[in-house]
Amino acid sequence: MLKKNQNITDTCSFFNCIEKNLDKAAQFISVDKKLLKQIKLCNSVYRINFPVEIYGKIQVIEAYRVQHSHHKLPCKGGIRYSLKVNQDEIMTLAALMTYKCAIMDIPFGGAKGGIKIDPQKIPVKYLEKITRRYTSELVKKNFIGPGIDVPAPDYGTGEKEMSWIFDTFSSLCPGNIDSMACVTGKPISQGGVRGRKEATGLGVFYGIRELCNLKEEMSFLGLDTGLMGKKIIIQGLGNVGYHAAKFLYKSGAIIVALAEREGAIYNKNGLNVSDVILHLKETGSILNFPGSKNIQKTEKALELECDILIPAALENVINKNNANSIKSKIIGEAANGPITPEAENILEKKGITIIPDIYLNAGGVTVSYFEWIKNLSHIRYGRIEKKFSENINAKFIKIIETICKRKILKKEKDIFLKGADEIDFIYSGLEDTMINGFHTIRDIKNSLNINIRTASYILAINKIIDSYKKLGIFP
Image (cartoon, rainbow, N blue to C red; front, side, top):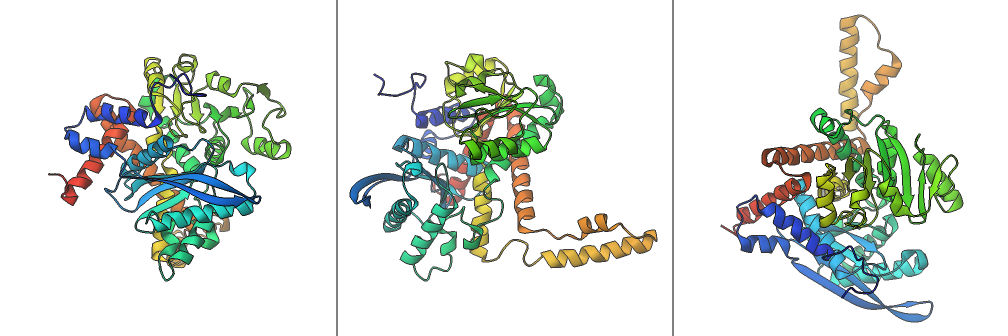
C-alpha cells in the first residue's frame, strides 16, 4: 500500500533507483558480487535528534549525516534543510556523491547531510542555533573534520550556514590549523573560493556545451552543432537553475520557458534570464513576466517543445506518467534523480539523449575540492604567480613589438598582460574537469554501445574498484 502523499509513479525508493543503475552498469564489468555490495552500501548512517528552544518552546529536530564510502577520505557532501529530508533521500544523495567524485577524479568519498526543517519559516537566529547544535553533534561522533568529512551547501543552505559550521567546529577543536577546511561553500572572507556559488550551474553549462559541440551527436539528434539558437526549458530557478540559464543565455541559446513552484512562463522568442530574476525579486513570482505566457501547472512546462530540457529542482519530476509527453531531444539532469528508471526506458525508446546527474551536476563538488585545497594550503589561488605571469607577459610583448617594429594597441596589450586571478583558475579548472569527464564517459559509451548514464556508472565503479585494490582490501 502506498504511503500518504507518496507519488504513484514511484515503484522503488530513491536509493533503490541508484542501485538499479549500478546493477545495470555492473553487467558490463567483471566485478566480485561482494565488492559490488560493498560499493552499494552506506558505510555510516548517523541519525540525530536534538532539542532546540524556538519561540520559548522546546522542539526536537530530526537530522542526518550519511557517509556512503570510505574508499577515499575525507567524505564530501552537502547539507540540505527541508521538510522532505528523510534517511532514504540522504543515503541516496551520499551514494551519488561517491560516484560523482570518482567520475571527476576528486579524491573524496561521498557523504550527505540534512536537517528536517523549513528554513523559510524559521528566523535567522534560530537557524543559527539549529546549525551550531547540529555541528556540535557531528563533532561529538567524529562526523566532521578536514580529513574526515567535509560538508558543503545544498538545498536550503548557503554561505552563512557554512560560516556558522566553520566557526562552531573551530571553537570545539581549538588549535586545528586546518579547521578552515572542515567545510566548503564559505564566504570569501572565511576562506571560501571565488566561483563556488555558480559552480554547479556552470558545470551544467560546460557539460551541455560539450555534447552540443559534437557534430556526430547533433547529427544523430537532427540538430545543428553548438549552443547558438538551441531552444531550452529550465525547471527550477534556484542557484543551479539560475546560473545554468545565465551561462546558456550568454552563449546564444534561447530560453523559451522557465518553471518554478507557482507555475511557468513561456516565450517562443526567448526570455532574458536577468530580467526574469529581477521580476521575481520585485513581485515574488516569475508569473506575469512582461511578454510571456503563464503556464499554471509547472509540470506542463516539461512537455513543451524544445531542444534541451533541464530539470534543475526535484527528483522524479519525469516519470512513467509524463515521459511519453516529453518533446525535447536532450535532457540535462541539473537536479539529482529527476528521471525515474521507468521514465528513462521510455525516453530512450523515443531517441532522447540524457546527460545524467552523476556527471552533469558535479561542478559543485569539483569547486568545493578546489576550496578544500585552498584551505589546506592556506593561500589564495593566483597570489604567488599572478604578478610573475604579468611580468613575463610584459617581456613577451616588448619582444614582439621589437620584432614587428610596431606598438600593440593598449586594448590588446591589457588582455595579454593580465595575470590569472582566483576566479580564472577556478573556471578553467572546472571547465577542464568537466570536459575530461565527458569524453572519458563518451569513450566508454561508444565502445560498449550503451547510454551515457550506464557509461558514467561503469567509470565510477571501475575507479572505486581500483582504489580498493590499491588499498589491498580486495585482491
